[in-house]
Image 1 (cartoon, rainbow, N blue to C red):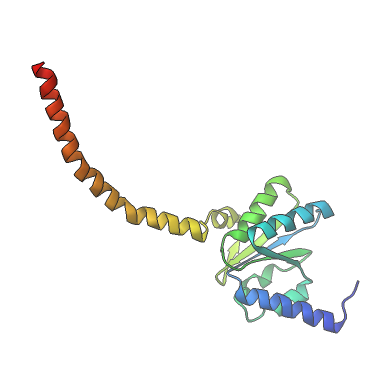
Image 2: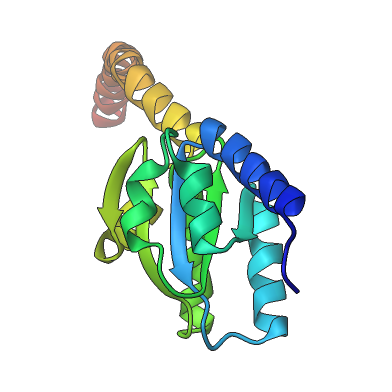
Length: 173
């Protein structure tokens, strides 16, 4: 069904609003997927906090103009689906990677992370980026490691003294 001018403006406005706040964007060709597979893709995207949208390429190019997601416009050709992540840079890549494991018909054309275009062959690298919570926990573990090591070292002194006294007692008996 063809969209009238007002509907096209609404689509461009909606996609542009999402693209302005997105930290990462992904473009994938969905040719060969059936309705059930597309529904599964959308469900997994919703669970991961990713906004998916099928948009005509000309409307997508207008919507992405002058946004941080403009870097992906060269790969907009054919039937594509756009995925936007608002918080986690690797979320779109993880959704696409996990979906491709079950359905090889989805072809990732490219990703945009922080305004930089990333080729589709780098999908696994981007998908393996830690989430914000994982990154914070890794940082906290690194910050806590020296303190733990100091406490263990200080705790070893009385432990060694106790072992020496116990060994002397066992030796005299």
